[in-house]
Length: 497
Image (cartoon, rainbow, N blue to C red; front, side, top):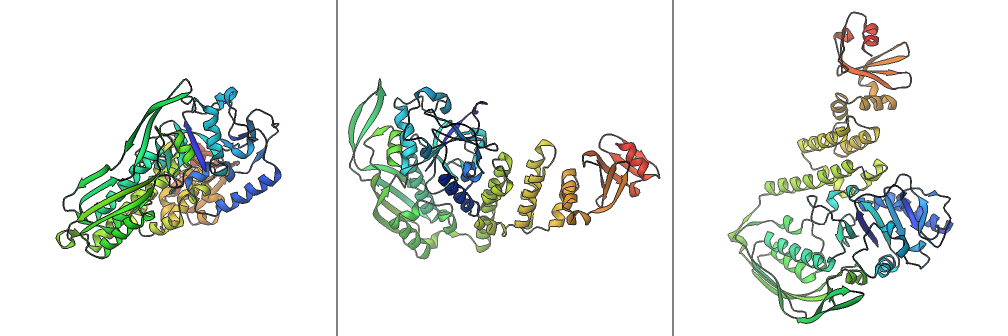
C-alpha cells in the first residue's frame, strides 16, 4: 500500500528520493524499472506520479548504514520516499525524527506506528510530500476541500483520492451511507431508514504516560440515517454516477436495478458491510478513537419510493446535457489541476493520469465546451507570463484529444505567445503554414506570421523583440514601446530591438 504524510515544506537539506538503511540491489532495481514501464503504459492515477518508480534512479554514492538515509536521489522529485524493503527490519526512528516532520509527535508508540505502516499488506511505502504539491481533486471531499497536515492513505477504490488515517473507519462508514442515500434519492425515494444491528462492544481510548485507559460500552440497533424526501426527478444516471461502494453491496444494487427497471415501491433487507474495504485493519485501528472496533457490520435498510408515475423524469435531451455538463466540469477540473500544480516532471505523465475512457467522454463535449477547456489551460499556462514548450505540447495534445482543429488552436495560441511560434518553428512543418516570410540580417532573424505578429531572434534563437506589423512590415509596433515606420523593412526590424 501507499501512505502519504502531507507537510508544509520539505527542508532544504532533505533531498528528494528514496530513504532507507540500504540501497536497492540490482535485482530490485530491475524489477522496479520493469514495473515503471508497465505503469507508464497504464491509465494510472495521478497519485502514482509522485512515486519515484516513474523516474530513472540516480544511483548515488551514499553508503548504506544503520541510520536511515538517502539511498537513491531523485533530482526531479518533490517527495521523500520510505520503502519497507530498505529498512532492514529496523524501524527505530527516535534519533531521526527530523526526517518525519512531526507526523508521529502526537503518538506515544512512534516506532510501532512507523513499523505498522511500512509492514502493512506485506510491505508498503510512506511518501512525504508538501501540501501544495497535492492536487486539490485528490481530496476525498472534492476539489473544494483542503488537505490537513498529517497521514493519509490511498482510497481503496480510487487511487487518486486520499483518505486521512485519523478516523478513517468512521469516514468510510459515512461515505458508504451517503453514496447509498444519494442513489436512492435520485431514484425517487420517499423515506429511507438505515440501522446498525451489530452487537458491538466499543471502548473509548485515551493514552497517557504510555498506558491506554478508557471505558467500554455496548451498542446495538443504532439508527445511522433516517431521511424523508419530497418528489424529485427520477435520474438513474445520477444514482450511479461516481459510485464505488454500492456495487459491493449485492442487496443494495439489486434494489437499485429493480427500481430502475421496474416500479418497486418498498424494500426491506439486511446487508453485511465491511468497513475496512481492503485497507489494513491493523493500521486503521491505530488511528481509531475507539478500541475493539468491529469492521464487520450488519445494517438494515428500509426504503420507500414514490410511484414512478407520480414523479418527473429527465427528457433524453436534458439527461444527455446534464451528463455532458457534469463530465465536462469534472474532467476540466482534473486536467486544469494537473496543469496548475505541475506535479509531474514530464507532461506525458500528466496525460497518463487522464484515463482513456475519460478521453472518450471528452469527445462528447460540445465545441464550445472544448474551446472553454483549451482557454482555461492557456490561462493557467500564461500565469507566469508565457507558455513553455512542455505546456504547449500538453495543450496541443489535449486539443487533439478533443478533436479540435489543430490549426485553429495554433492560430489562437500564436496570436499571443512567442514561445508557441518559436516552438512550432523548431518543429518545422507546422510553422511553415503560419510563417509568411523570414528576414535574416546582421545575425538576427525576423519571422513575420500570417496573423500579423512579428518575432525577432538572435543567432542563438534568443527572443529580442516581438510585436505587430502593418503594411507588410513598413510599420511595426513593438511590445517594448517602440513604433517604427519606414519603407525599409530591415531597418525597421533593427531599429526595434
